[in-house]
Length: 432
Image (cartoon, rainbow, N blue to C red; front, side, top):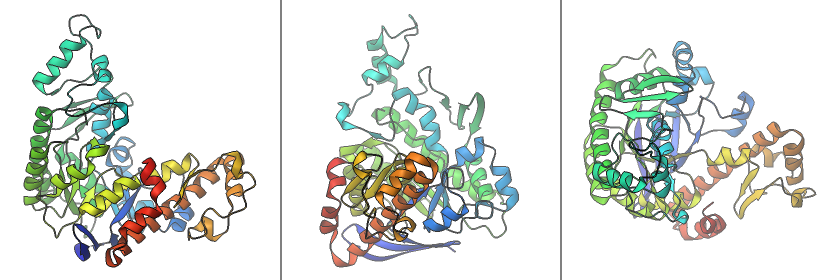
């Protein structure tokens, strides 16, 4: 039921088709985030209007919100959610990172280089403040803490606001006052119960502030967990009849060339159906890190860049050979009244749109633009019926990204990538 076919290629950039039990996915493409099985705020009508091509749901949140027994009883996430499109689920690894090192280091997946944090750097000033001296109970010995971190690679050291502990067996974490445990085997079992078309191996995601020593330990642990995930996927039975899932392994290694290449070679040698590129890196390192991370992966299998969706990053990544992405940007930005058009984002709540009768984008074929809802009308919805305004904005932004990827795929055969980048110049210049 799963087959990936490369249709066109130019250098490292390629277009293809990924066939799944719930339809074909034209690549490159973006998976729209549907955290709890559906897109936030959307009802069945909204989902149908969006004409979704691919979504990704969150195993962690479905688990802690006790939705997985319902999904299992219904016969899988497609029946339970009513979505007809191919669906992915993540493994929960990034959420563990968010509760652990993400909180400790005060960073997300991408480190903003404008905050004057440079690599390699074992500890930032924010990190030093977060760690309490074991002798004095405060941060007066921040220098000693930084030396400790450099010496031990930060393994198993978390600040007081961390809610996760990483062990060889798996991860123990706290969420909403309750303790949970995730292991590679449990992650696979939960994803089997959910029944998505594409699932991911459980991995350890590192922070952009982690040093080489810690990234090496985390990478090796991810490799051991990958083997356990493959065994679990083979040995565990599913309650879903004729279930056929593709399991993707994840390449880690942080910002370090030797680790990324080693992880790529090792994960690429395992019998995964496709591969995810995980971990964190700085804005300026995207191209280099992707080159290393893809170096050992087989050409004939799909590659997914996890959690990335800014336009500049998309253009960099597709030219490196990335096939799939996932990101909250299209819907999250829409909920904050930021509307995407090729010439740049519109803050639709601004006064300048109060009497603007123009369509949002006359070249867009989303449900909103086809029904000729003007910019002023959309602004009024945000003022007087915020939920409706948010849903209309989300429909438009989703279509914006669908159109973008359609243009990217078309550019493979016509060699017009440079022209396409110029069309979206405002986004590339401002980095969203």
